[in-house]
Length: 61
Image (cartoon, rainbow, N blue to C red; front, side, top):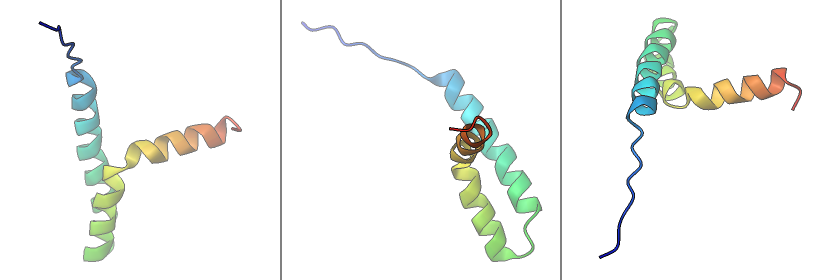
């Protein structure tokens, strides 16, 4: 019988989830209308991409 390995990512998923909630609250609270709130929620889904982009830009990469 072959052994299978399972890699769990519970802690990182929890951090991403908290970041998602925080980003959604931030972006939606700064929205000026309904569709800007929808856009804010979509931005909250991809906030790590914004973070990495700004980090790489500040490092000159």
